[in-house]
Length: 99
Image 1 (cartoon, rainbow, N blue to C red):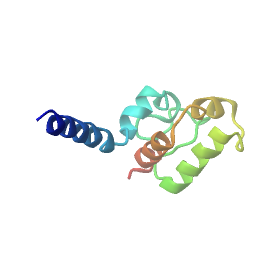
Image 2: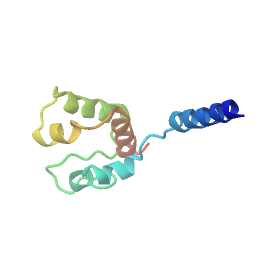
Image 3: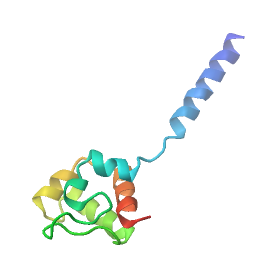
Image 4: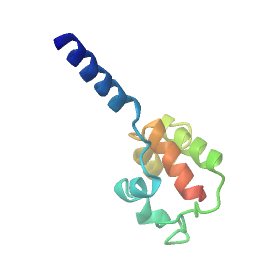
């Protein structure tokens, strides 16, 4: 009986780890501070900040990856993107593209 119990617990633990959802782009936009410049839906709050609303998801994802890698230069965005994970970048790009 102990063996079966151990197997059942191991399977439950594996299933719990395997099904992690990607973070919500809307929640991340607030948490990471994106909304402070780009607005909640990607409509900039000032003309000095670009509108993200309506940009292609792939474009946004690639730009965030470039900021993170340091191959696209912008002091604010390089710092903001430095700690983003691939999953967070995908979620933010999807959110701001309207996808």
